[in-house]
Amino acid sequence: MSFPERVRIVEVGPRDGLQNEPGFVATAVKLALIEQLVAAGLTTIEVASFVSPKWVPQMADAAAVMQGVVRHPGVTYTALTPNLQGFEAALAAGCEEVAVFAAASEAFSQKNINCSIAESIERFRPLVAAAGANGIRVRGYISCVLGCPYSGEVAAEEVSAVVAMLDDLGCYEISLGDTIGAGTPGKTQKLIEACASRIPMARLAGHYHDTFGMAVANIHASLQLGMSTFDASVAGLGGCPYSPGASGNVATEDVVYLLNGLGIECGVDLDALVDAAAWISAQLDRPPASKVARALLARRNKEGCT
Ligand code: HMG
Ligand code: MG
Image (cartoon, rainbow, N blue to C red; front, side, top):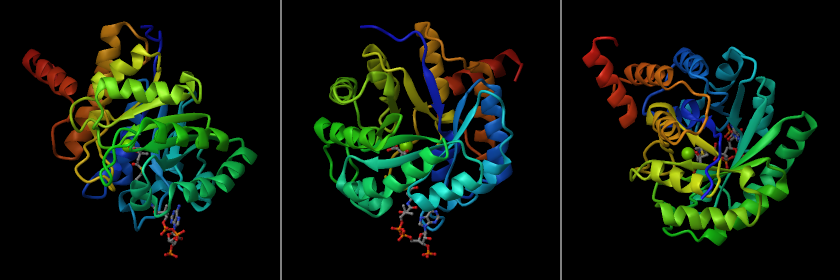
């Protein structure tokens, strides 16, 4: 067991979180949220998704968000891009890092991006080439690494095969998406071991949705194996529009609380993060999904210092 000394959190709330809202969240609200996340110390923030607005209307303002973001030194503002068309739009909007997204399950690939896994890799090829020509790094996501909402069990070997494909393609980091939050710690560790036999652990990230309340346990299990990058969503916002019933990513507050407890650095100020969680939840007219945010807000209320 060797915990990393430092963890990098990739904040995906403005994208993975808000893409799943029933209503459209105003561009100004998205921009204000991103500012608060920067103020809390987050340095990688996925702010938008350049996908078809017919498929995901909540991300239709991707260009306005990417252009409207106030650039702070040391902060990277990233976006999802499913194909060359999306990449070109992201580039024109000033995006400096993009992510492609594949799946470990054929059924999910079809539902999410309307093509097979192999076809998706072919679609990414010209995108990665164009990104390289423009000095832009490409991250890769794999969905359904611990189960598929349409086809059920997914074997670790199916996931590690896609890891190898994204590695060959040139992705600098590969984020393992437990889209339906079905994973448990033992299974998560087996998955990571299979993937780390293909690429170094330092290039793998964990992206765990919290549908069954297991995400923090799965992060702890991943830390034990030395994984040191995790995606998280402020206030536990979100889900995936093509994964019915899936809840949001692990809440960033829950991850920071865990890391603080373990003495692992992440550079995020928990109080400022809870402010951001409370603010966006109020905008969406509901309490934060995160237990840590709720507990800290209740404590503040009791002390009369909200
Ligand atoms: P398609 O219909 O197969 O694409 O969709 P197409 O190339 O045949 O084009 C059809 C139309 O879409 C055309 O417009 C294109 O211009 C347009 P029309 O002529 O009909 O007016 N189009 C686009 N418009 C804007 N931006 C683009 C773009 N590409 C084509 N980039 C496509 C294929 C991938 C576009 C579609 O399936 C799509 O947008 N899917 C969205 C999927 C999505 O966003 N899912 C959620 C994000 S993934 C996720 O949440 C998982 C993750 O968090 C990890 C995890 O938790 O597992 C990352
Ligand atoms: Mg996700």
